Amino acid sequence: AVLLNAIAEGANQYPKPEHVNYTYGTAGFRTLASKLPSVLFRVALLAVLRSKRLEGATIGVMVTASHNPEPDNGVKLVDPSGEMLDPTWEHHATTLANCPTTESLLSTFTTLVTHLRVDLHQPANIVYARDTRPSGPDLIKALEAGLNAFGDGVKVNSLGVTTTPILHYVVKATNDKTGEYGQPTVEGYNQKMAKAFKTLVGNKGPLAPLYVDCANGVGANALADFTATLGDLLPVHPLNTATGTPGALNHHCGADFVKTKQQFPPSVQAAGFLNKRGTRACSFDGDADRIVYYYLHESKNTFRLLDGDKIAVMVAMFLGDLIAKAKLTEDEKLYLGVVQTAYANGSSTKYLTSRNIPVTCVSTGVKHLHHAAQRYDIGVYFEANGHGTVLFSDNAIKTLKGASPTSPESANAIKYLLAFSELINQAVGDALSDMLLVEAVLAHRGWGAPEWDAGYEDLPNRLVKVEVPDRSIFVATDAERKLAYPVGLQEHIEEAMRKVEMGRSFVRPSGTEDCVRVYAEAKSSVEADSLAITVTDLVK
Ligand code: 16G
Ligand code: ZN
Image 1 (cartoon, rainbow, N blue to C red):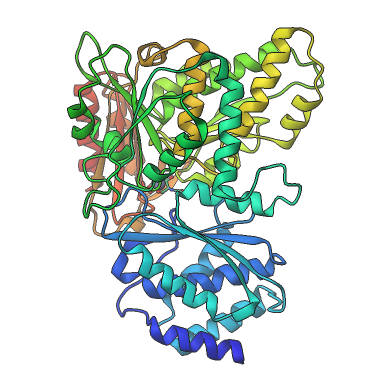
Image 2 (cartoon, rainbow, N blue to C red; image 1 turned 45 degrees about the vertical axis):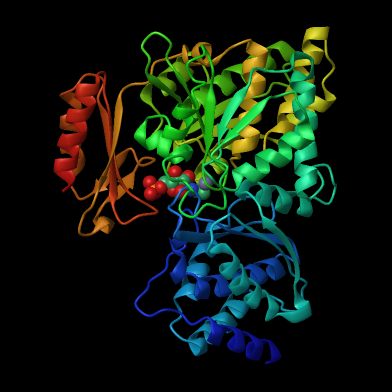
């Protein structure tokens, strides 16, 4: 009763706006920041319930809207292992967020406690953070109001302003009672990565300078902290670091801009360093969980994108070579595979499968990729948009630690594989950690951007956003590569595909916006365009 009174008091200060319907989707709750205070208050309640349900395991709460424009914001929950919230709980988040009144919130809360068998006497631990958005502080206050309703029943740890992947790291490290994953702090994160990076490339430095577009977001802070820890092994030149400038966040910069526009951020181009052969730059997104690379093609003088697919292919090939060099015995054999979505460029999939690297295709959204990657000993997953990581199974780590090297080469390969497992964020895609992963592989291969790019040529492709009256009539199947509904549409899409050389197209309802997306690729740019237009017309 004391608790319910406290919740009621708080809830009254954060009433749900009328006529708004919230959904906890692939990216948590995400919308205009002004619509979110009540959601934050209620998310706090759910986070505490989840932590208590899991006997006090630490749950994370991240306040961010990633690559969205600055007026947006969002919130998502992180499970104890550092992964996204258990999908069966997403629905409870939606239910709480949509209770129209304080009374209905209280009764829903009480029902959830019973239904989810939560013992309110259990401890609860919550760690939270936000990105640099101006709406962040007020939303954090709403979150804290929800947490405070439990009084001493919950312990909180605020990380202040930090990246999404650092929050995931801290959650995972806090819950790892062995302490092996690393110290559960921002410093612990930086030290762990710096140490692994030095093991991998310490004798190859200083590396070629790297230009990093921080999207005017929180990645700028994380990058500065990390480079201070690392020293001058990797000369980093940060760009777009104006986290305090209103309107600057993600504006004409950042990973999403580069990937969707397929062009340089004007600010990066203006900096003028791209003309030097092989000079590579990369862009983080607004919360630094995505990264893409790019460079200027020397003779053609054109923009060349090195996206999530290019990263996945280079990394998988390199780790595959290391596994071969490790000369593990038959019993110790490690299976490596790549997980992609339907958005992966057809050329990348073909490149991998023709080199006997197994590829799994899953639906869009990190949780699907993450779970599929867990089925390999070493699972490389990347979305084309630059979100991804590499997962090392417990078996892989145990095997590598226990392996007896047969030569100096195999000893080195084993050492490097273990260092990669430390360098790579095992919880979630992480722009900073992925950047170091790419840099380490390039340094080992002795490659610049053009050599990395040379592996395969992307098929020209188009992504079209189509506004439709009701996107719920579009139901995708087969890892979103086909449409099950509306009945008959898939046949027409396939007919259009057959008309262009190497044509591939699919349609799926967006999980984050009120639209459907049409993807088309083909042998030539003209054919990709025409396929995209035909399929868009079919959908309208
Ligand atoms: C979310 C997903 C991202 C995916 C995107 C697709 C997470 C953390 N994020 O941002 O992985 O690429 O949605 O958006 O899962 P769409 O459904 O609007 O195409
Ligand atoms: Zn992001």
